[in-house]
Image (cartoon, rainbow, N blue to C red; front, side):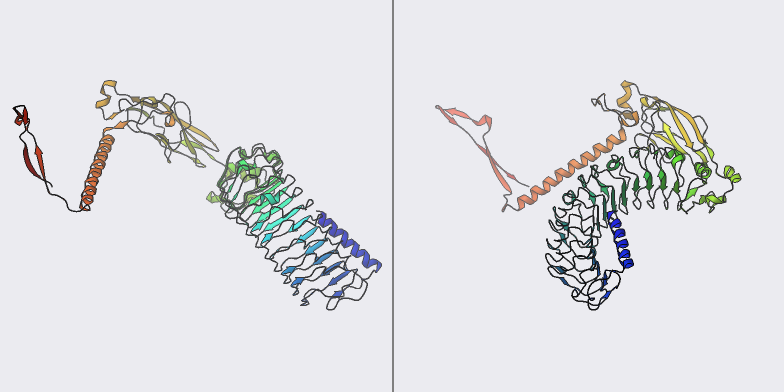
Length: 604
């Protein structure tokens, strides 16, 4: 780091000054301590309310910490042209006037932390062409204004953590082409100031921690092409990363810890082919999936500490040929199999401590390499089986490893033949119980040798039983149950024959398809089966429910009409109807004679 190199040069220069006996010129400022041999003036903890007068012009280091300074006036330090470090930390500063530091042409380090600054005006840092390190942390700054640091072209490190920042202007970092490191921690920012970051084209290290972020949107850091180290941590509401949130970056180190990520962000990471260090600790990540980290070809270290990790799938670290350190301590892992790695030959450090490890054949590879593997001072211990519970890995003698770290091959207990003949529409169960050490997993294959899942019409129940609901003719065939664990596999085959109903009797049977219903030939039913049939019970219930709904609607209409009519004033309860009977009409002398009739009807 360039700042560190400059500090070393300053240190040896001061030592040289002491050796040759060069003293500061002039008397020392009142209530300050001036070294007779060194160009250093210490005015700390003197309850000063203003910058003291009489500081020697040749002073190179001025310490004004822990005083009561409230204001820095314009040209406050104009005479101290040799000053290289100025420390104003832990004061009560609320105002820094424009051009307060004019004249400090040789200043390299400026510290303003632990004050009460709410805003720093544009121009306050004028006249500081050589400052490389600026610390404005632990203030009350609300906004970083446009061109705030515009006259500090040599600035390499900016510490702005622990402020009340709610907004960073788009041009706040303009004029900082050489800034290498930026720290923004414990602020009130809820979004990534992407436009402001785009000005920092030379930035290499960014710490973006303890913020109120809820997500990293696409193109959050797109212009930071030289960024090597991105540290985003302690953002408890950060639960998602957009697919292109890290696009444009060529990181070598990435930390996304103490957040709320529920899974490894495989998609946002896949293009980071130069990444060597990845820390996802303290996120609720329970599984590392197989093969999805393979694009991180140069990855050397992965940290997944205290994530609640339950399972690392086989092939999880495939293609990671340079993988040398894995830290999965303080999780809920029962085992970590060798098949998860591309090659364990490159692995140097393995942290497995703090997990409920089962010391069986799955961890035999760790025991065989325990003299070459380093556990970083935290050797793992066994939780099961009972006879080795609590024993550290290094406590096992070589002679007992082979007989202790063993497994018992999976064995299916239900060997009785299961050949079922069933009528169409019935439910069929096939049983497959197994034991072994470790406990075996059970999968079922259908007649087309596709794996069946826990959902659908044909499904695998949690106890390993295969359920075929509403059996169809097309379900007929041989099904295969496979029980497997680390020590081996076992399998059995069962058969199902489903008898369909004749076409002439389908409509009279308990199970039938509605006539006139058809399905597209390209439709794929669940687990390869046909569409669901209908039974009489289901149809009766559906018709009954529909009839009840109809009656309810009619009753509601009558009630509405009754109350509506009541609101329209006086209602006539009788009606008189006049009519002409067809047989009463006659013609007399060319004239028509019509006899009319009348009757009265009572309205209800």
